[in-house]
Length: 324
Image (cartoon, rainbow, N blue to C red; front, side, top):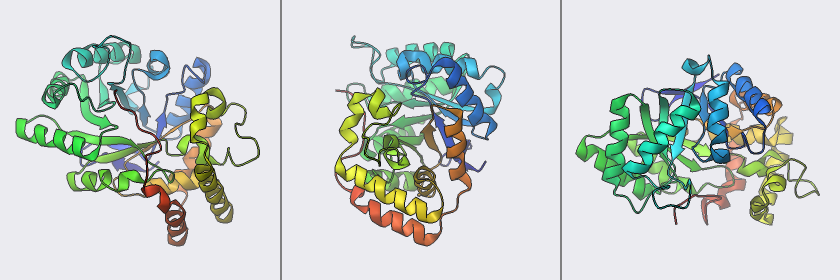
């Protein structure tokens, strides 16, 4: 397995990471544990979850799966998106974050997380309050590093400025939607990350499966796919995205690999990208995704991928999660 530093920090992460939002929802506990162990056995050390995934089941399952293997894992979780209807069951206030961290640690069966991420920008809580709370978490030893997800570039830069002014620990990573189907981070977020030494952690790297080739046939929603199990996902199955998926599949066939491997390999080579989190519902999917770490696309192939995905640098992001 190849590793990268997460931004300019001292934390080394596997080039391929494991996304876990399906565990306890689309994947049962036994299979989820097998997927986690397959990833670890394949050299993956970065495991990404959140307090809201599958109604907290993802964290609980991960805690069970990591018994006896915790030391070899860079474990990250998040808080900030709604856990309930009450005003203090969302956001990044001191009250909410302190409660959520303690509950996440219990479910994960650990006394610390390597990376604690704010799941989205909170316009209702002063950033000073959030960053002071996160600084306290690091001082307590319950959190090693901090990051943020779904922040706009200006929001992230504002947070970095406050941390520098107040002497707080800094965000080291930005988790954002990024793929051949969504290159909008290249306009502002990635230049900011390169300037500030922040690592990018892409989510939806395969655009929910569109870039894996599974939606390229006549059947719009193959059995077991995200589009079948989550009807809301069907909104992404537009002609624009499906055509991109077909083009990537053609390039992958010419290169003798799969569209999923090709899409991940392209993303791993983008500036500022530290690790790419990919979900899996079966151990076999993990093994297939691992091929992206060793697959070496040539310069001409990368240029062709750049060209077919260029239109996706503009317009709306493929996905973004915000508080309303």
